[in-house]
Length: 104
Image (spheres, rainbow, N blue to C red):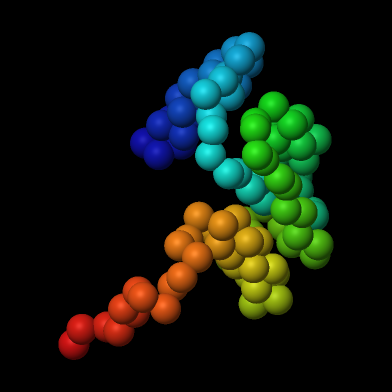
């Protein structure tokens, strides 16, 4: 079932994460979100991974827990602001030329 699939995927990712040079060639702006109350993932491992990735920053979110996307609006606002900060430099300088109207 799902639990067995999750366990297998976890083992595969653990194998990949233990390799030296695992982030070589990873060359995109990256933001790693960290929950304040985290009992599943060690935030120190997130920081260590981010240190290995070029152009990476961490985004710790106070008063949040592991399932950040299921949090309060206050926490989600912080998360989405961080994502905006990540994406903004990738957008064209002049967005006035982009038609954002929705077709009906």
